[in-house]
Each structure stands twice: as structure tokens, then as C-alpha cells.
Image (tube, rainbow, N blue to C red; front, side, top):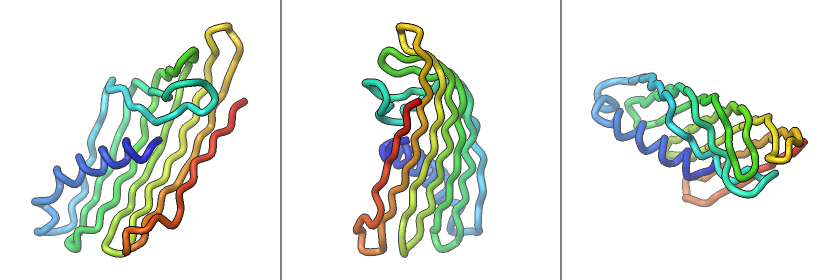
Length: 143
């Protein structure tokens, strides 16, 4: 899952919960149905891996404005010349000291010529309180 998706989902969650954060710690669950989620470059084939299916997001904001979000999406997966099934999981933790975004995505399916292919991706992006990236890592395994 790319930083772009995590940032978009994080921003949506933060906007939804900002008014409630001043009053108390708030947790919200959001269900996603059928919306295509672009998890970024597929790595094993050209183009982005896109999952269209169902998902759930859990968002928590506390009185200090600290923010946590986790999500899972599962469904049909496509990329250039690839179709199959995929599951992606991600998390975002953000406070005044740092921000950590991480994800795992697994897809299995076939190439357009019928060859089976599985894709495993994982990554982490960490930024310290000075806004400096301390970890930027994405790995992709093709099988």
C-alpha cells in the first residue's frame, strides 16, 4: 500500500474525528464496500495493484490529538496483465513525536497467459518529530 493511500485514509479519518477529539478519546469503525483501493505498484507486473472488495477501518483519536488507524481490505485484485484475489492490511500511528505507517498486501492469481503468480508486499514509513524520514522501506516478493 503506498503512502498516498495511507495519507488519504488518514486524512479522511482525521477530518471525521477532529471535532470529537477535543471532548474525549473517540473510536470509529468505517466499512468500505466495493470501492477500488490502489495499493501502489504491483512490483511483479507493470502497473498498480488494485483491490476491489470489502474493507473495514478502525480509527481512534485521543484528547492529545494522537491518531491510530488500522484497516483491512479484501477482494478481486487486478494489475496490468494480472487478475486474482488479494488482502491488504495497514496501520497508521501518529502523535506529536512521530508517525509510523505500515502495510502488508498479499495477492494470488494468474497472468494473462495463464501463469500463476503470487505477490507479497510489505512496507514501513516512519517520520520523527522533526519531520525527517527515519525508515522508508517497501519489499515485494514474486512467486
